Structure formats: C-alpha cells, structure tokens
Length: 84
Image (cartoon, rainbow, N blue to C red; front, side, top):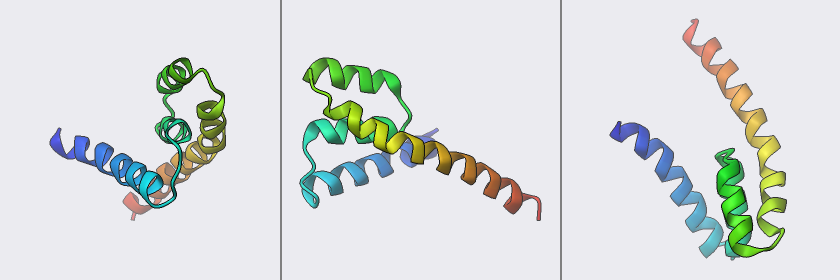
C-alpha cells in the first residue's frame, strides 16, 4: 500500500513543484492541470468553486485528453510487454 501511495504522490508533487517553482504557473491553472492529470472531476469542481474562475477548467480540458490517450497506450504497452 505504501508503494502505491508513493507511485501516486511523488509524480504529483514533482510536477506541482516544478510547474510552480520553475515555470511560475499560477495556482488555479496548476489545480486544473493536476486534476486533469488524475482525471478527477471532483477536484476540478472544488477548484472551480473555490476560485470562481474558468482557469482550472481550461487547464483541465487541455490535459485530460492527453492523459486518457496515454492511459490507453500504457495499458496496451503493458499487455505487450507482459505477454513476452
């Protein structure tokens, strides 16, 4: 369970820190990007309700399709890799 938590938490913290510190991404956009990367509509709803802005939704909409495509490709690659 700890390994699963680390696999989930570490990439989010790394991307969040890099986007905030290196790219100077604002907090609202970062909330949308992280919600989109996790494909988490409740997180998007919370960020939008708290901010009363469209910035989280725009960031979510730009990241979500790529995330879904990468999930499908990753599943296919895992199947191919494990069948060998």
